[in-house]
Image (cartoon, rainbow, N blue to C red):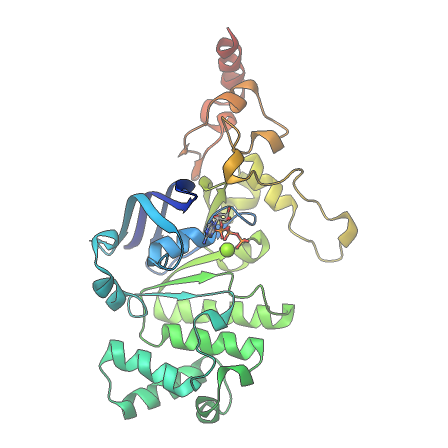
Length: 335
Ligand SMILES: Nc1ncnc2c1ncn2[C@@H]1O[C@H](COP(=O)(O)OP(=O)(O)OP(=O)(O)O)[C@@H](O)[C@H]1O
Ligand SMILES: [Mg+2]
């Protein structure tokens, strides 16, 4: 399998009152060609900060990458100057945001915005870029694409805007697409259409996709592999076809239980007890321990490493030691 993106030990923090608050504590993940990797976790787990760090879009915030590597096709992206990175963004690696207006300019016509990005990266003439833009809009199912090109983003519905955004971001044939909750702002029917569209595009282009969501249901529908984040750490990684049977981490199991089932009573929907800890007030030991029904003493005292599990990786004392052994260890830890 051809590796596209390899993130190793990525650490990012934000400075506040002269102090750096670390948010990502060493993220490791990989996206291969032709693969959709789901990045999941509750709100605040650091999914967006991970994607912004990879794309180096932290300028304008107090955020800074503190350590780690972001390797794309053998190039160390973190060593690139902004001018060099700009050649990669939109051309090699593209990003779709939850809110399309984050990347579309409301006062510039759709056509002009699309042409500009195409002319910049593909060296097309204005006329060629115009034709390419129309064909891209048509490929994402936009009717009357030539008319849409003449309009402004604010004239479009949410679903249409997200399609324009996708067309724009794939117009220069990126090898890697990062989609940060691209459908959460849309209603369920449109959401399903956009997910299917992304899946179709990915299959016809063989792109690698890092798909960010808090919804494991969506992951199970479109992803090949899943990386689960909690409190700025990767806590589990698994092939999606092993997710439901072989998830090892109690947090992943909790997320699986929280997937709404068709026909289920919404009021009785399961949710993991407790809340994500604040970066200012992280527990020692495993960050999930205060919410974990299996937590042992060792879990509250020492953070487990992310270690190989049967089908992937897991950061859990139960997994890394085996339950009995963990119990033994817990006893010896007490002495
Ligand atoms: N610009 C910023 N300045 C300071 N702290 C930030 C900034 N952006 C994010 N953070 C902090 O980083 C942590 C992770 O945020 P992030 O947006 O990555 O979460 P997320 O997993 O994407 O959540 P969601 O599902 O809500 O999008 C949060 O504690 C947040 O407060
Ligand atoms: Mg986010």
